[in-house]
Image 1 (tube, rainbow, N blue to C red):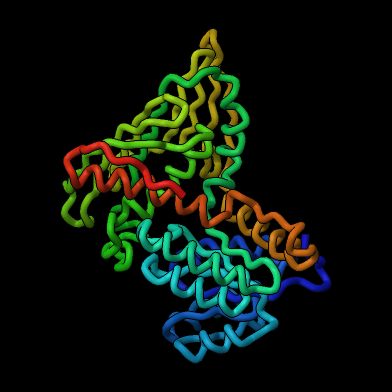
Image 2: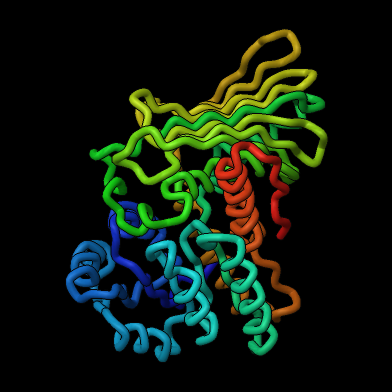
Length: 361
């Protein structure tokens, strides 16, 4: 981990709801690993409102805004890493600017708005990396790959034997009381809330089954007209290992439910969203005799992914470039694969269930 007497200096680019409600509280829990130097936003009002919250825990955080503020961060060689938490349509562009300036980047999910943007981004990243003196990290913050329940589920999956069926059920709660409901960028995003919310559950699916989805066939619909289209998706998917499954997503349900269920020849693994004094996931393993063992894991994925990113940045500074291997769960390629799978489902839905092969990354 980073030495506490010389913590890395970071800046946050973005000052929206997620920064204020998640990033700043989680960062305050691990403040020995870094020094928060600045927060940037497009407008002064937005940046100063986040800085005001940040200064309760960190103190002395600089307020930066607009083009000049962004340029200040680019030119400040003491800022080693940036966390990019902006509207999904602008994240890749800003991340690439930071990478060109030699900053290590942790970008909030989704990795990009579509696979075309991802292909261009990966190509640009490759050429920036080739010209850089050391390794430059571009990480995508997908906290579900770090949720203890899913990490545990990945360990237990071998116990159920050969996979026979997979189900992912997501009944969301994106109604007017949700802080992200009126988010304009999510509403104008292709795929709307399905893409922005859905990448979490796709990340969980891919991590649990341990192989990729080859093809999908999906139906989509637009029922709740106060939400962007589509707001419902039902997809059959086919895995590399020969198993098939279903992914069902309802953006706004009156009775929210989230679960992954994998049925094998020797048992069943189920991970379901729940509340036991705090929010988290209940992991249940059913053996061949139907006996069930369950454990509850509170949410802590955001904190875990941040710790891992800071550890990567510190390791990267200490080791010679050739020796350093960044955490794969944070890689841009993993984020790209999540987007590619959802994009295939949405495309199939727009083509009345036609089978679509998932673009490979």
